[in-house]
Amino acid sequence: MRALALALWGAVLLGSTLSGRLDLLLNGVFHPLVGLSGVALLVFAGLVLKADRDLAMGPGRRLSTPRATQLALGLSIAVALLVLAIPPNPSFSDLAANRPAELGEEAELSFVLPPAQRTLTDWVRLLRSQPDPSLYAGDPVRISGFVWPQDNDQPQLARLLVRCCLADATPVGLPMRWPAGQKPRADQWLAVQGTMAMEEHNGQTRSVVVAEQIRPIPRPRRPLEP
Amino acid sequence: MERLATAWAIFQGLLIEALPFLLIGVGIASLARWLAPGGAWLRKLPRDPLLGPLTGAALGFALPACECGNVPVARRLLAGGAPLGTALGFLFAAPVLNPIVLASTWAAFPNQPWLLAARPAGALLLALLLASVLRLLPETALLDPVLLEERRLSQPLAEVGLLERRTGLVGAVSPPPLPAKPTRPPLQEVLQQGSREFLDLAALLVLGCVIAATVQTLLPRSWLLAVGGAPTLSVLSLMLLAVVVSVCSSVDAFLALGFAAQITPGALLAFLVLGPVVDLKLLGLFRVLLQPRAIAITAAAATVAVLVLGQWVNLVLL
Image (tube, rainbow over all chains, first blue to last red; front, side, top):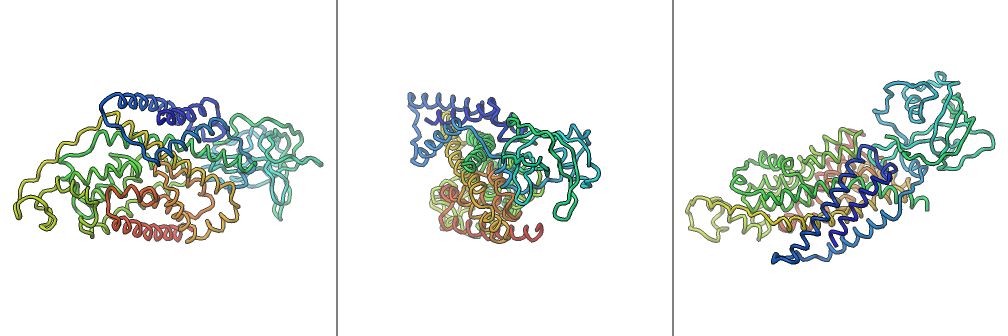
């Protein structure tokens, strides 16, 4: 049974790496570690199976299994099967609502791309490093992201930054001015073309994206930004 | 329903991120057990009240293991006749002062370099304090009787008080007997024990991830901010959480990540420093080493020290 539980955990790690599930859960730098650990757990399971057989046949003493260990074993098998069976499908706007929107010091821009090539994250970083809306007014914008509802404002288009895993997902969003009569649904992924403009918000001038063409897109294969 | 789906995704993220580090930790602990540290060199370790615990703490880099892996190693050190301070320093500091734990802390908090320095420093201070406090007790009141018997076999007779001697000539200064060369356990046993340890800890990790994912998604954010934002209350609540969750030091940083945005820095450090020394699982594990009174003193001293540390960090950083 222990070998089975180890093999199931190995399958969880290796399967998540091969199926691309990790793209939705972890920062890319950890993917090779998870894959290798999956392989190591499968090898470990094989060795434990062999050791169990050797001990069962040989004169060596068998280790008795305490009740707590049996419970732990059952929990491992049940949870590993559940994880294998039910893939993650988080609501990005829920994740964003649970975390304060803050960028660390490393969020400085190292170079600036032409406006039409900037991703949503590039735009947010640029606006935070040089918050002068007049610099960008009229620039073309081509970005994609998910719809992130705001309390006292129009919904923003946003992305999630992940340093380690989904638990530290930090939202970065751009204020949007949606076409009249259009109210995008929370969590929907959209590709937006438009221009940067300036508007007054709570007594301050800020940059806002005026959406001109909006196209629903499927969730990208790698939805998290490093 | 959507919240539940989000909690499930966070749970998977935490679990899948932490399992590789748990595997490395258990692998190294098993290797240390197989290589069986022992022999005459143990008795040559420094006895100085300060240098002893520091040497023990530094052993964490040579024998990296989380707190569950290092209890058996600390027992072997004590049974082999290592100085008390050194063994206690190893027991309390090595679960944090080792490369695996530092790597996982860095993986979880790459944007908070202060934590990478404060966590080992806090653990070292705590280990020094606990070793100094526990040294005040005589060994007979401190160590488990079975362990004490084994330890006496490896100690020079002259080091043992007259009333504690059970054998030997009174007053004789005989050359210390060389401890029997530790035998290497068969590989099958090491594999079985390693697999059991991994699965026991994986179960605890699952429970910890459930708590972290639930707290982050299902509890109202206003509650979290009310508790996490208050300096003393946040330190106390995270200390309580560390004791209850009982997750291994090699992966606890990932669980802390779930709360990090809502709590004070002192509370974060308190969670990361207290968990490896005092939690529900360890209270059981420590019974193979210490007497109940010594365990109670350890828990009380560690709680007070970590509370002060957390408060102090909040004072400086907030």
